[in-house]
Image (cartoon, rainbow, N blue to C red; front, side, top):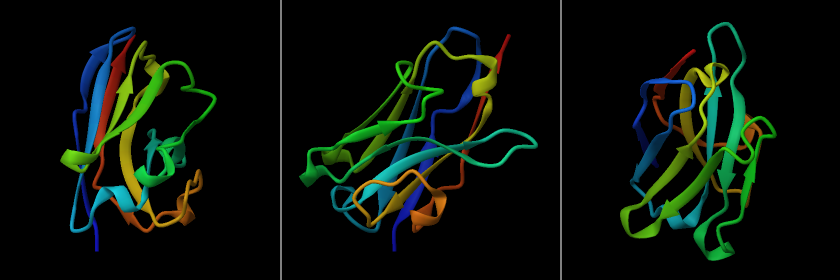
Length: 125
């Protein structure tokens, strides 16, 4: 079993930055890929970014809507994956979830085996 805890959400004005953290416990984060998803009010949960397991070179992949603004990374020593969010827009407002999968890299929810509880990000206009 893997436990994931997201932190770092908050309320910021448009154009600001936030860094979300996803701390993993129960199993070495280096052995699985990690993704970030988000769910805005009244909308389905959507893929944001993912990073492959560490031994594979930590390949990353992003949704088009965040490409160039968000960056996913990992700190292997801390078993933590980060999502650096820059140039935030009101449409980035959502609950952000991190998730872990045994697959190499995945952009769909069904591929993920473990989920955190989510952290709220609100971007004001």
